[in-house]
Image (cartoon, rainbow, N blue to C red; front, side, top):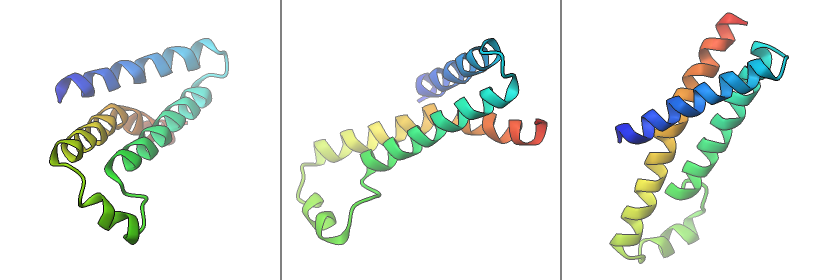
Length: 96
């Protein structure tokens, strides 16, 4: 769990470096952090099955527990990677 959170911190640090080196300053850092956050939230929702309708939901109940655990772990890990970028974007809202 902490491994993925640490990886998210590294990704946020890389976003800061790329944004500042691009020359646009903190605005581009904010844009990169928001982009990473949106992609992470969408991927997590896809892994967790948050965007499916009722008919497909009942079909997912028949999947193996092993597959369900794997998808849940992937969704949770994606959220843990995304959290530092969300925090960075929130901080930059108040700084910019």
